[in-house]
Image (cartoon, rainbow, N blue to C red; front, side, top):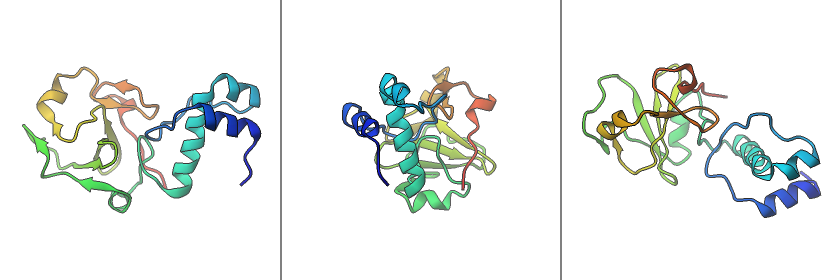
Length: 151
């Protein structure tokens, strides 16, 4: 796959994203890419993530078993401190970034929490408990907090 000169420049002058985040109004022309290089780099990373099925951020599979094959840990029992939730959800942690997600069978929740242990008492104190598909913090029980799996 040949990359354009503009894509190579964007790659050279920007930082690698840590996870998949959908980009609103992605830059398409060379001028837009040079004016918004980090957004263009995020689009590059998103395409790479989908190509190689690297699940992270808001790019999550429909079935959670695929996460375990891609460097995630099932943390439903251990590492969840203080007040385990009463719902039958399954919690997963990405080893490389400590990203936390919860599978509620029909959708995912991406926690606004980046520590090794998921502490529910501390999370309940936060006004914005989850991230939406664009990586922005959002409140609990809002449609934005529900992320649909892909594949």
